[in-house]
Length: 352
Image (cartoon, rainbow, N blue to C red; front, side, top):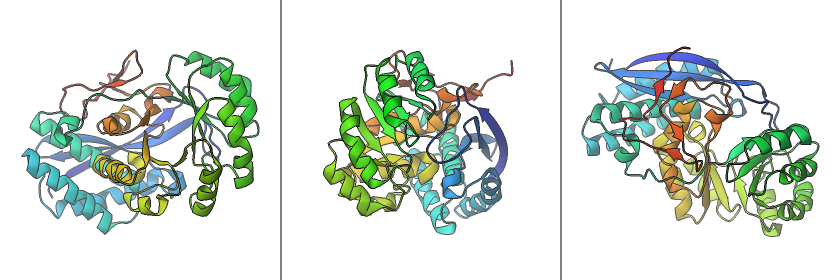
């Protein structure tokens, strides 16, 4: 067997309650770390199972050995830069052809493979890919809660250049009014499929008045005619998240939305994310790079392609009460600082 796999399930409590329009745990998330070894070298990845796509910790752990078996079919990871990039692209194809969906599990293995390649070659993943270490600043996300609580959290993180406010609850405009009273920068709203068309159309002028710069996923994922209808009536950009899972979803979104949100846990890792970003741009779409509420492993992996996008929503590790990993630092300008450390550049913090 070419690769040896070890997994670890992490329970990650949130710093503050984090609820979205879809009913999910607002107190903590669970994620699966992957340690992938070849000839004594090790790569680290993070598989974030997204319940919305039918994924759980249990399904992730169940499919990982099968995915590693598919990787074994093409032999060991080479350690020449050009060869390794071709090998990684072929690995994506093998996993995609061999097992549908399961973007979280595939994403974690893809991260671990990139980390393994970078560590073995002695280069950071961003240099391996040919991307840049100059990134846009990240925003900071606030979950649904009563308006006063959301505003207090907004005040606490008002040094961020933009805030992303989860909406689709009972008091969207009241919440945004309360946030605007303590924060003067751009606001981004994310309904996580929680609105209906007429409701959204009526809200758009109010959102524009309050300085909202974009609206993310107002309707259920497959309501594409309704998304097109809203875009035709909206003064604000409409972004697709739950509607834009894989690169193959992009052609049907052309002319339907203004842009898409790419996440490694949806599309299957670093390589698929970079290809999806570049395809979206070729179709004239804006791109936001997002994440789940995951550790610095997943956030660092996304940061490797972050120079390619318009907006960053890479704050998952910042929402945690305790991030188990170090090595990825946020600068005073709220930009993630990529280093010359090999691989993803993250390490497990010692226990206190």
